[in-house]
Length: 192
Ligand SMILES: [Zn+2]
Image 1 (tube, rainbow, N blue to C red):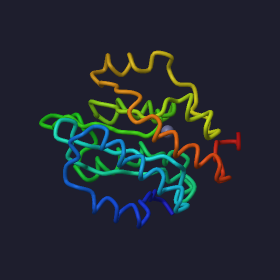
Image 2: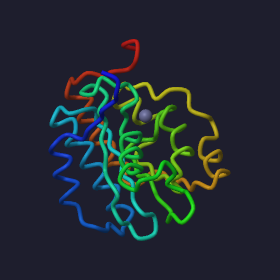
Image 3: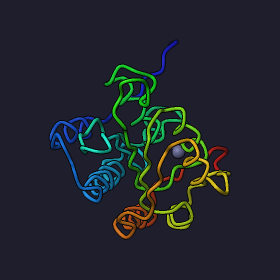
Image 4: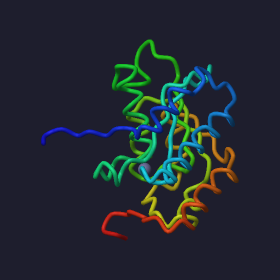
């Protein structure tokens, strides 16, 4: 076995196929992402995290991905990595900000962890939209979000990536609350 395979669960493939071609409203993009996060843990196909890649200005949907750590046995299969990687495969480029590309946006239901934060500049996206803050994610779920840069928003902005926070926070938090009360495993490395 010398390849890595991360796939979306069947329900998420079907949900992607039934999404409208465009989701113009920012809150509606977030609501779609939050719904995937809820469905992911309800279906027991991963943690309560989802991320979507959209054309920033038109809202054209590229893909919404979900966390696949436990089913894939891949600790890096966070929703952001899954969504960005799928978008790059779909658009046939490793750089979503490359020459001739329109501006792409990553929409996530919880602030990216330290690993996913690092993946954002490398991906080429020009915009990050966040639901719940890192503090809320950690307190509601018990997941360790890692050592993120204290001025993480400014660091992205100096690299030409806009940051929009606190979009549909209450709806985002409800998923984390539901997950926290579900008794499902929190899979931090070292079982921390
Ligand atoms: Zn992450």
